[in-house]
Image (cartoon, rainbow, N blue to C red; front, top):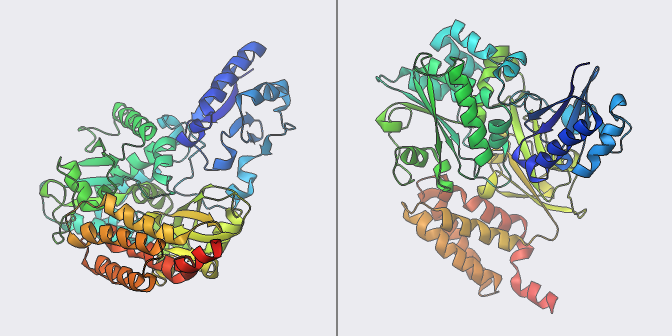
Length: 514
């Protein structure tokens, strides 16, 4: 009789709620029953409200159990011969869970399914097909395929990936580089971390394809220091790929892992380059563009991790299949990350075009508190706050931009009706003041004066005059800052003032409280 295969996630989110203790208890309980088990530590499928989600292999597929604790494990084994399908924690076949069934998983197709450090498992689930096709197409054909797919940068700017690659490919130079931006710092985002921990070979494959396409022989992956599990897992995956001959000097492409020191501004591509070169993370003036003069002065492709990790599927299945998904100029899928006060927090990969209301109310299930949803912030700490009146907005780059919002890295943070939007606006200004690299005056000084002015508004001091001053400061930040940190800070501030004016009427609020 073959060993019973049990899948327990090793994703940081699952480990934070006891996945390691569950795995250890399963091993102990199996020994006590004399049952031979094979415990496979996978990534997470992204249903965080069900973590740790344990899956047991059966002749007809896996069966999942949600929110398993060590105390629940004996109950699973009591009916293991029937695969415990009647257990109260059983949620059935994972792919039939509505949250998963409604998704279009392309970038995250293997996450939560494969052993992250098994190259054989990766190959068995269609891994390396994209690289094989890229080699058959050649550099120019590969760039053309990525361009035709309509893939845009998933880090926030939404710049067409194919155009960036072609610019670097056409740039004359002896050395070129691929830089993966995995400095995932936006509030409510975790897609980069999930892939690094759950499917690291897809990033490796994507970077090799990018190197082949533009003529680069080395890549750097810049990971934020707050992700120790991701750093450890990805570093091991690089070693596995090197041992297999997939990476290394002989293979024609090398990858080096670099760890950031926690500066939010290093998520901006030129600050990231400065940090990679061992300098202080400060914004560079543009031009020259990194595609012409980037890392160590050489032509450089800088892509977000999700962009690079999506390339293998585009090459494997064809650009047309990917471009057929989405709406308008927003093609393909986006990993939407639901967080904050939301009932069903987790990663939901879907084609562009869902409305904000569908995402929050249907997929997210509303608030975890059970109170009404009042505001949603999309795009991290620099994203606009949208009220329920805008919930018919399509999740699309252009639709959000038309409303002075941004999709960013796909983070969606939900707030119920207890939120104080004046304090949220203050938080945006304070965040900018703390995280500013200090290079440009509007960001460095404007955010600090803005925080002080918002404090006066919250205290009820000369509210009308100070709101006018905030508006003026935001205009200066938006049009005078060197990078998006200062340039986008006005989005949350002005959207809070515009859509929730009642929260800035502090004298009225004080009077009402009395």
